[in-house]
Structure formats: structure tokens, C-alpha cells
Image 1 (spheres, one colour):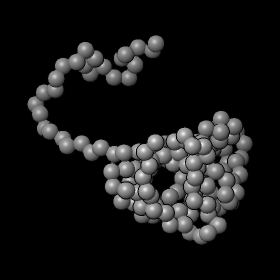
Image 2 (cartoon, helix red, strand yellow):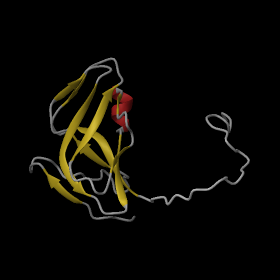
Image 3 (cartoon, one colour):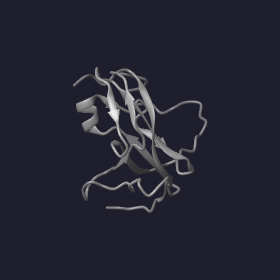
Image 4 (cartoon, helix red, strand yellow):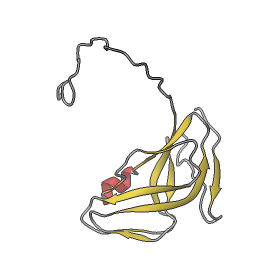
Length: 146
């Protein structure tokens, strides 16, 4: 498996360095650094206490944890959230409670996953027409349901 080096600056030594749960995990868990209660239908911006220097040519994507989504109906509205390589601020996670019960967070609770992916930038070429395809301009649902 390919690896990259990511520099991390922690707010304090009580904040764990993100780690992979298993040898083939795609993402590392991000943890809350605060106590917070999110009411049903509300959202909150949760600090993680870490800052990163992501290598050029990569981004970090912030994704919901499947267990929180299934069991507590906690999601990330802007999923996947993008952390650009040139961002040096604290990693924050926007959580939304889609459930019917309040959700309580404590310091150290796992709140999201962070996955590192390569980035390709496009060079745009202004043209007068585009090549024809079978699908053409068919949009949402145009390829069928099954």
C-alpha cells in the first residue's frame, strides 16, 4: 500500500495522533476535543485539535463514520469535506444530527474519518463544440434505474 508523510501539529499532547484501526483501513479516525450536545436537526462545528501539512498533490477528505450514521443518525452535511494541501488551520468537522434524539459528544470521541487521496488539476480548453456520445446531454436518471 502506498504511503505519504503528513506533518501534524497537535494542540496538546492529550490529543491522539490519528491512526488506522486495521492494516488495510482507508481512513483514520478524527476525534472531538470538546463536550457538545447536538439537538435533533441541528449541526455543530467540532474542533479536532490538529493541524496538518498535507503534501502537494494530495487532499484529505473528511467522511462520516458509518457506525455514527447508522446508530445515531449523525452525518457530515458537506461530505466529503475537502482539506486542501495548502490549508494550515485546525481541522474542523461539521456534524449534523439527523436523528430524533439529542447526541452528546465528549473529548476523545471518534467523530469522522479522514482519507488522503491524490488530486489532479484540470487545464481547460475553450472550444466551440463537444464530441457526440450516446448519452448526450441526458442528466439525472437518464441511464435508467436498474
